[in-house]
Amino acid sequence: MRICLIFIVLVLVACQSNIKETPSGLRFEIIKKGDGILPRKGQVVVFNYRVTDSNDSIWIDTWRNGFPVIDVVKDSSFISKEKGLKQMLRMVSDGDSLTTTLTVAEYFNKVVQMPIPSGMDSTQRLVYRVSIDSIMSKEAYRDWSYQSKLMKRDKQLASDIKLIDEYLTTKGLNFISDESGLRYIIHEEGKGRKPISGEAVIVNYSGYTLDGKYFATNIKSIADEKGIYDPKLHYEPLTVIVDESLVIVGWHLALKLLSKGAKATFYIPSPLGYGFQKFEDIIKVNEILVFDIEVLEVR
Image 1 (cartoon, helix red, strand yellow):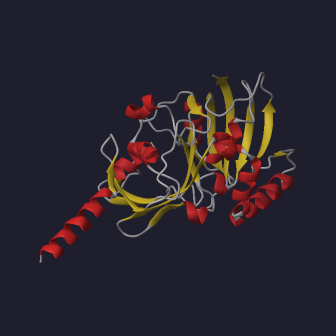
Image 2 (spheres, rainbow, N blue to C red):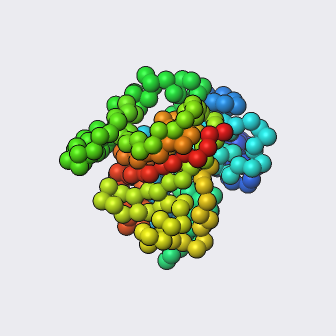
Image 3 (cartoon, rainbow, N blue to C red):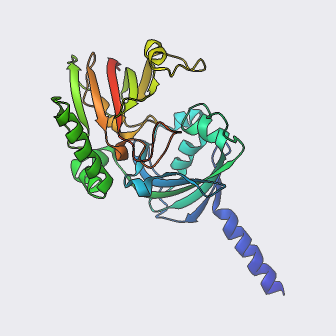
């Protein structure tokens, strides 16, 4: 009997050791342990994740998108300013698999940083399942041999690129092809150097789908014109930290191609955008996105 009790205690202790908590109070469970080496300042955490709700509906699935996402680990002085998910990525190692839960309200307020769509149950819980693909230096991540390896895993990317090329050719538009899969048109050349990873880029932008439906802008006059004005939003220039801010991958790639004063239109394949993620009826699953971007300043 005593042996059984000892065994039960050991099991409970082992289970508890897999439960961790970030400084901001987000609890998560390690369900598979990796090499145990935590990421250091400046390293890139490459990971896949899936978000499902209490009805088992999939909200996001980067495995299905075919393209993982990244987080760049900042200096420890930033910890108190970070949200729970970013803090969590400081506490993982290469090969870890983990799970955590958020309410819909927490997801929209702290992750996507958007208003909760009307009619959505804000108390519903979402389950995050995360798998750490690798932890590496910024240089190793930016190396094209690694990027091309990621691209080759994605059939959707090839399909979207073909569709974009056909669309632009049919319209008679002269465009530039980037090896990442982006297609873009420069309307005004900028001056000076292009931004690098970790620098701040201040921009004006408008986003719409290939069929011309606008879904986002930081310019009030355009929001009014396109019927998407939201009084809860602040219409002001947006600051993006290259390779660090929580924007789509396509944006980070695009901003590195523009210097101060540049104006351009980018056609972004879905794996470099929201992929399998859907936002109401405007941004559908595997939706190609178009962004008009003006760079106001590079810091």
